[in-house]
Image 1 (spheres, helix red, strand yellow):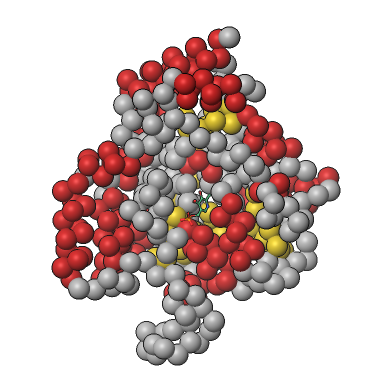
Image 2: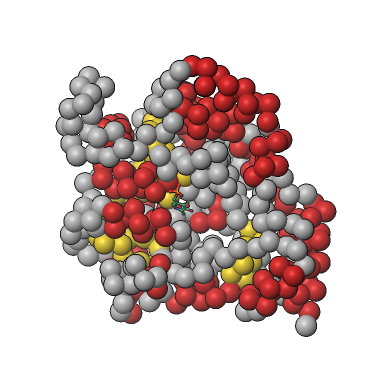
Length: 390
Ligand SMILES: Cc1ncc(COP(=O)(O)O)c(C=O)c1O
């Protein structure tokens, strides 16, 4: 049996550190938005702002360019909340349109529609499965307020053309980094390139809590102050119980923050393990499946290892019979889901979602997590080859 994921093994690998953090927090007597959350916000912002050189690509700061304003972080209750709060901070609401992709977790579209705005879907690029910049310009209308590129599976979306287009049209860019903690684009960590970056700490993520959690990061103090205000009913620290704006409750609890602080220390090492295992898959899997690609300007963190084959359903059934867990991310594109089909303005040649619809029929996520072993990769590769041989 090789399960799709093994969160218990990850916990056991760092049990003493996690247990100490939990005990410290329980002992503190303070359980929501306290010192652990404040420390995590600082540490996560520092981690994102100071990338190590990777793939030989130097971070722009290292070449003597002017450094941007310090990156800040506001911890919230989930990745969905992070996206919704980021949109609210940008004054996105009723009557506005936000462009994103339909090949993503439904949370991306949910966050948009929860603000009252309409999600507009553009197609994805067949190589990286992320937003196709070529589809973007045609989707912009006078109602467009923001673009949400999704760094799907741990690979960066093509941010340079997306940011350039957004600048030309005065649109906000909110990066959905829920699957890409520590991934880099042209040497910079994802989440730091757009107006705001949004993270999920759902337990299976590359940086996962032991419950729900999320964060918004930005260089823009004004936007971040808005997120902080909206996170807790529109209260300011000076005037609790008096709402300055209509906000929500999206507080991160101290236990999750303490756990995330422990896990943050392991993130780079776990991402490196994911990359090594992905390389191993690349060498071992048969040519009958299409393997993920890493663009030369990118540092992929392989949140998921997604292969493509026209015989996806047969492969999945046969792997299941061989005791190997798999998943499909995602089986139904958002514009075809009952809740979103009537809402979404996706029709017409400008927004044809051919690649998105093709992917939903052909993709399969194989097991990939930091506790997986090289032996297991070998077993899975053999099972894939056998399953597709007849
Ligand atoms: C791409 C993407 N965006 C947003 C989210 C939402 O995060 P959460 O589950 O923490 O609300 C997720 C995770 O499920 C995701 O994978």
